[in-house]
Image 1 (cartoon, rainbow, N blue to C red):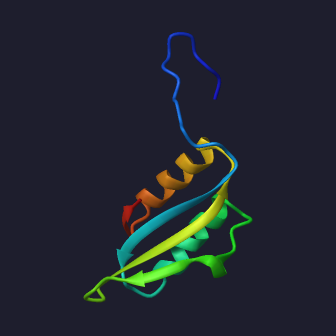
Image 2: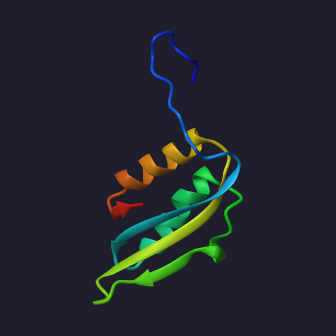
Length: 94
């Protein structure tokens, strides 16, 4: 994205590239974890799905999937976050 004169520039304290964890929560249903991993792989093709951590909620109704990927830019992280938050199976992205 080119800088536009007069437009605010976005500041970040994150230095890229870096390992970036993203936690995605949704209903504990068949295919949820796989759907999350597929979205992450679209934005971070070098992500290893075997590294995904899964934790069910205390009552077992929800599942949290944490994927730590090698982030190369804020634009990459933003695009991944946008796609995950718009996915119909996803409730929360942290």
